[in-house]
Length: 233
Image 1 (spheres, rainbow, N blue to C red):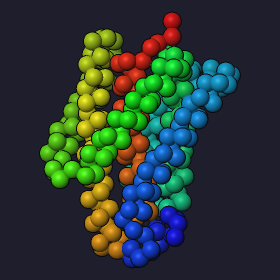
Image 2 (tube, rainbow, N blue to C red):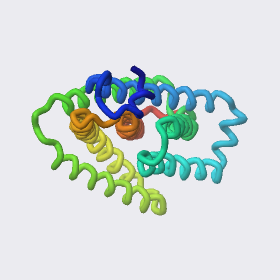
Image 3 (spheres, rainbow, N blue to C red):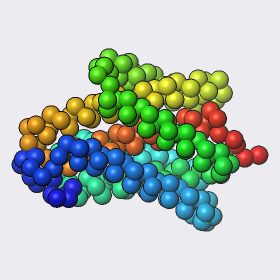
Image 4 (tube, rainbow, N blue to C red):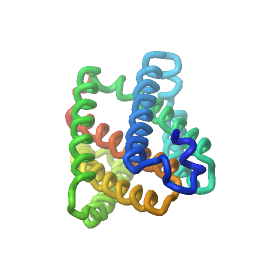
């Protein structure tokens, strides 16, 4: 049984909970591959990269980049799985387009090193979130509040350009997204188990779960890169 079929099944027969978690990580990994490929591809094609780096073009892409995942989460129950998947793929590619700027700012070996560190941290925290018996709900709520805090601080700092504020936000971002990986993994595991026991379709839930972990991964990577990446001279 494939993942498309899971959206139309009224029972969990033929679609195990382990299959659900495998789908989450498969969709997430696929999105990361698309993002990395799009980022490097855009950077490698200078005319396209120069066009995207124009101020208003880049700002427009950032706004769409905010809109797409929000739309997917808000309307996931009202759209088909194929439509949700199309939005997910579009968001992955668009994120890659906007992230092409990191290849202009940071040395390639540094980007690869930080990426490997991010993968290691993600695996460690995902395993912890999946297997721990501790309830991470309280910690997760604090982390989400902290996330709102650094987002607000970052927006305000756009007007002041304070390097120390950027550093603090990035350092806190590493802590917050590291914790959120464990929290979101546990939340997703609990949600998947509940839907599975109720015989509810899991396909779109797996896609939203993949998006959540994808965002955790990308933001952890970017904050680590900001802190430890070697910039081009």
